[in-house]
Image (tube, rainbow, N blue to C red; front, side):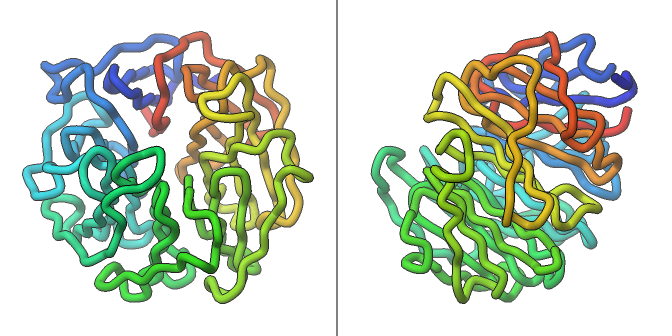
Length: 328
């Protein structure tokens, strides 16, 4: 394993754990570094052109870092009155960003046109209350790599929203996908270009921009039936990873990979059985062969060959919400 990557693990209640040597040693980001150490971290992202420029969504708003996560600063904007659950950065123009909020604050979508310095709330209708979670939350935002004005957004438990104009306006797709318990969304460039929506107990795909949807039927395809995280592998526009479990938090999990935009799937061999559902997966364009994945309660796995083989890192964590690596 290479030791020149910075790895960060976002946790629910213990802030960010950071390793500057590829996972050999770890340090908890402390209050003297600008982020409260007991933060409920929900998401971590980095600028694809400047990986050391990062953003962290928490229960106390949005934080930014310009030095690879060594220090953080609260973004002073209306978005920081919200719990930030999801962030997406335009891969071609990183000055354009989207962020989604939710539980325990209202579900909303914000857009930045200046690289995250300022944010504006965009009009999007969302339920005030949903079963099981109270206020719904934005669990995923996906920018169409073919048409970057086309933005997809998933809400737990309030369905799918779509913007065709770069976030100016949003429409609901509820009814097209019957399950409103949306865990994540992604768009694979393909061909064919495929929108993938991960819901509780199934996966839906569309190759016609949401006009029609195919239900995977994961009870017949996956070894477990609770999918959660999703990631399209940069540079391999037909390859998609999905993390799954037997339930939430569950007692077991797996990592699934499709190399044909979701038509067929394989379960990746893990050296140690996960202790809970596999929750998150992350791949960066700097080196798409490096894949990180975390279980809900603290197991962290790494692949250096695009997901063919895996190792479990020695450090275990509390509840994992997000993982991210950048070059050291």
